[in-house]
Length: 271
Image (cartoon, rainbow, N blue to C red; front, side):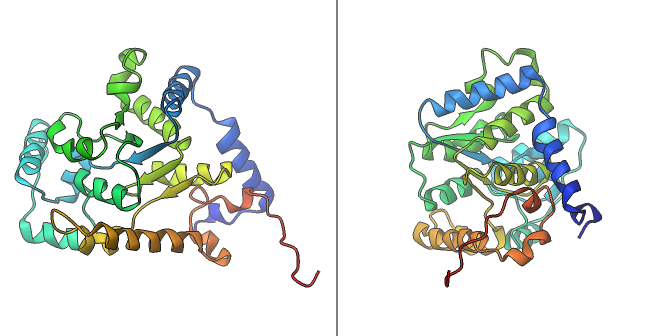
């Protein structure tokens, strides 16, 4: 437990006021983010997926995929004078341990196993490999109404800000925050902050991160059993929903700000 996660309640309340009320994105970024949200909501409920299938993340993990992806990774690393070294054995061990980034194809399988309809509007956040568009084709085929920030929603208004990753990340945050269902394919600070923020808002919109190691056997092969995969995912979601209250502070404060949520005692069964 971090010291910052075990402060007196008044200080924890102050942290929530600062984190979720006082701190705000600057007006131009907030306006663009809310504009994107309104466009998405105009067609009905939407799903947001924080897809951590990014070149720097893949190179860092040293995971290998198909020939096209590996060639793209080598080219990407070479252009930036980054050494990309891995071997099949090490990569296979990482995959079996659930340590490799979830691919677009695997993401499509997971969404389908969760029951997401193919015509659902899905917002893909994160620095996914838009330059390597062919690597994203499985998602394009599975969900033809997919949306990518800089390509679709804000093309006419984002202007020169499109070259600033921090601005794009801020827009991703706003759109993910207001989504009807948020799925993250990997951990990280942004995911932790979004989980806590959505929990604090209290509108009961689910935030879900699949636990990779348990899903590896079900995801192996070009056509996994979606029924089996769906059952595994349902178990993970149920376990998450039934986390014991006495284990709440096992999570970092910003991941689950319990102290800032009002609790109402349930009426006694004998009352």
